[in-house]
Amino acid sequence: MTDRLIATRFQLREQFTTELSVSVTFDRLISPFYAGERWAVRQGGSCLSVDGSWEYEPLPSSRDDAFYARFRFLSLEAAVAAFDASRKDGAS
Image (tube, rainbow, N blue to C red; front, side):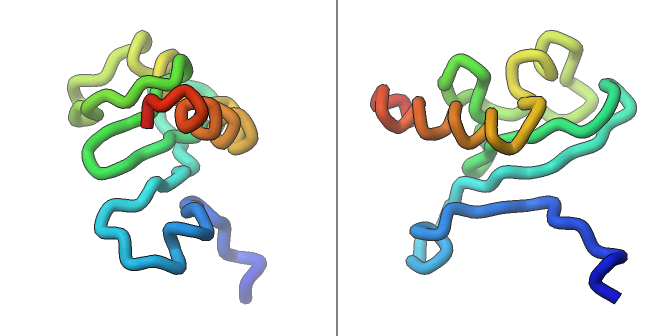
């Protein structure tokens, strides 16, 4: 049965074990607006960009190719690395 399931969201272990109201999530996404899967790093209504800044995530109908290039990562590893770098820079 579990071979039918796929992980689509990850959360930081330290946030999972505490009672934080707004956790950071790493979401696996597939969209008709780009080929293949991408990853988003989200917290509340914000999304992490590839340069490490957090910005409001607009509704899907307001997103364009530039948005997807700035806010979608090609791998989970790239998303986690960008998140870790944002924390070291104090941008989180």
